Length: 411
Image (tube, rainbow, N blue to C red; front, top):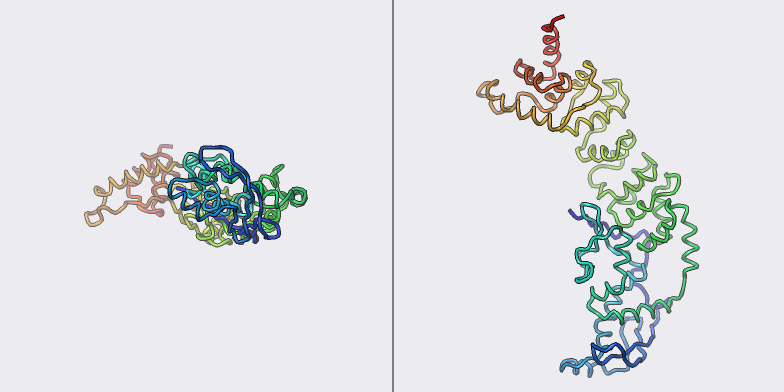
């Protein structure tokens, strides 16, 4: 299954990128080639105006007529195809528009289908977001994606870069200001490569301001490319203000659609491993029942939560009565396998037609949870099946059965 992270921006990054700092026209020189096969041509000036219209020395309408009869003029291709392609790509090239990235079920990264180019990266899996984003900005990739000459894209990119000038000093100064917010060295620079700028790093860190100390780079990537809502992340992390938990929350796939931040936070507060928290949320295990078990069994809430999740892994839902039976027999945890419980369910299902009246045939002799509790108490499959044959049908029958078995055993 392929997940498509959002392309959320934390502040207005002006996705309509200007050609020049003042929003004016861009003038440059470019070769004019009269044949697709040649690698040189005479240079002349070209102007791209602020509305992206293009002025060249050519009579473009006459060139279009010539092209209809097999002629070729590279400037006609420049105006009709390369400039529109460059306009489309300029946000990505300038890092003002964040490249959308998708991930597959095994954690590999891919460009979205619409950004994959044939004979380039169609179906290619990248080892990181950074490598995927860097590839999306390569001129060779963009040329294949849009079907335009790479050399023309290169000229446009160079001219635009010169117009904007070198702002590396300002960029580095701002990066230095936020570097203490990120755990890894040079991570701010790598985040900028991914389209996550220093001002966004500051905003993302503010979402989890309850966390003390630097955050992993993966947190910022999750906030930029994941689907978790920032407000939701901020509300949940206060229950476990830990940097790595923040990164984990940032990468959860639309978690707010299932349970409230308070429910997520409650399970985190009980100290469960992340996988167990996910299972508890997936199964909608009730936090109120955790408290009920804790009160009835004189356990901590953390222990009660852990016990419920461990039994849930076996597809069992014990009641307080089940837990009391287990406690009386010194069973602290469900050290059972799901396969063993499945086997008992199948075995007792086959027994039901022989041990029950015809009217009840097909109904289970015992529910799955009671069978699992029996196995935890008695220890072996054969003992459980013997108990079922002896008439154990509910949690209440377990005590009397164990008592009778113990009385028959020789001193």
